[in-house]
View 1 (cartoon, rainbow, N blue to C red):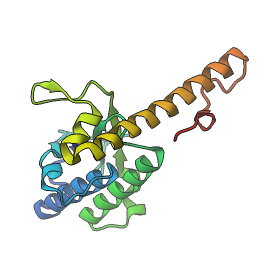
View 2: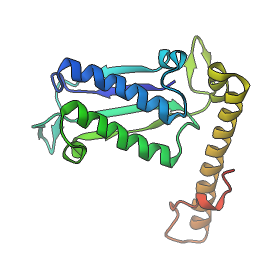
View 3: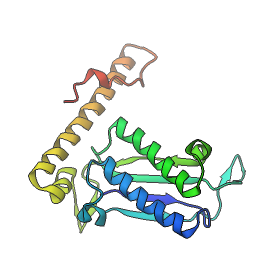
Length: 187
């Protein structure tokens, strides 16, 4: 289900390393959605759009080494904070393997922006597809229920953050933007 925008400077990787990176990104993204990357139906709807920036600048000067930007997009409800953190770590490691360097060496040059598309804003086959509908198409009623639970949990966390920010702002506190999601049960 994920759509991935991968910004890779032309010639940053040898063709075989880039092809392996695309396979790795596919597997990583599917796994972080909680699905099986060996499932051909799931793989079939996991697309990567490779963008080739004409130039990348760092500190106002042409970058001296490739800088990578990976933007995985999924329907709302698929990522938890832990999933996003794991995804960023694994994508960075995959780019490091493609370049043949340790992840701590390349970390400053790999930017990962896990993005959730609001429920009701994911369109395919000429229609809006909501997370429960998408999940059902991959695993019937069981996965539909999982999609419903994930979306409900995401919305509870968002509501907790909003309530916490409002409470802080109304109290005149300085934590108006603090995360108070722990105050909302995420069953």
